[in-house]
Length: 343
Image 1 (spheres, rainbow, N blue to C red):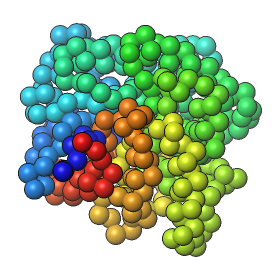
Image 2 (spheres, helix red, strand yellow; image 1 turned 45 degrees about the vertical axis):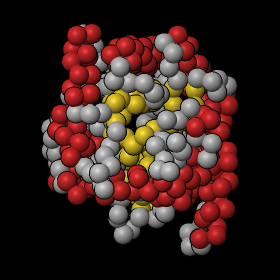
Image 3 (cartoon, rainbow, N blue to C red; image 1 turned 90 degrees about the horizontal axis):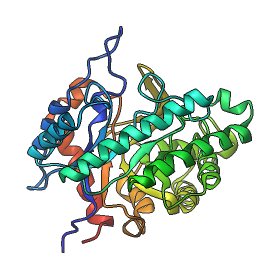
């Protein structure tokens, strides 16, 4: 029998992340265009079933009226999609600010979570959204400031996350902290684990694993002391290290991104350098996507995961506008579900 879960989603934020109107930047791709590109993809009559969605301009005004948000829900459902996980606009320059900042900054962070929960509620009531989480991170770019007092700053982030969790729980939502080397206090597998344990609310605050970002956890970018692999590693060493990392973080994992990485870091626009997303079929990709996905998806149903999402940020617009890009992505997503999914 063909697996029907997890549902296959595409992310909308690759049309936004690293885009802009500054010199050297490409313009954002509209929400409707990203939806159309996703809807056009098809592999042996299988299509994407939903989208994950960043709650900020120009795709969405986080302060939009209920009526405007219901209109967006109509647009998404009209393209044949459900909505899964939502990305709260927690960063400086959006609604939020650093989770380890002063009280004013932390209030902005919590305001962003409140806005995301409000929008989630409207989408849930509409019916376009039936599952998924709200994604957050520390919103503290880079690790230099965190390193001034790691224990104190981790406690500060955890305090903010606990307050955010109370907001989310009141709205029937869960928060997933995205593991990515650019976020202070979340920049290595060990620091991510320490933060989750310090928060200590696994029923509401979990982990979002992205294949591209967590690969750099193994290499110790931004935290050489936590590297599990050294240059020149072999296949057996890789999977032993991968098992070690996933055994620690998988019990916390409530959201999952399929992705590829070539072992490099990359940044664009205001986005700090992080794991470089590569096309799904990139010949320089270091990951066996299907095999690696299985480590994270073990027991996924029991942790409430009902969908997986492709993430490929900071790609050129020409690549994003190419229909074959999305067919290749969808084919890889189908392979992941065939190997590790359920009915």
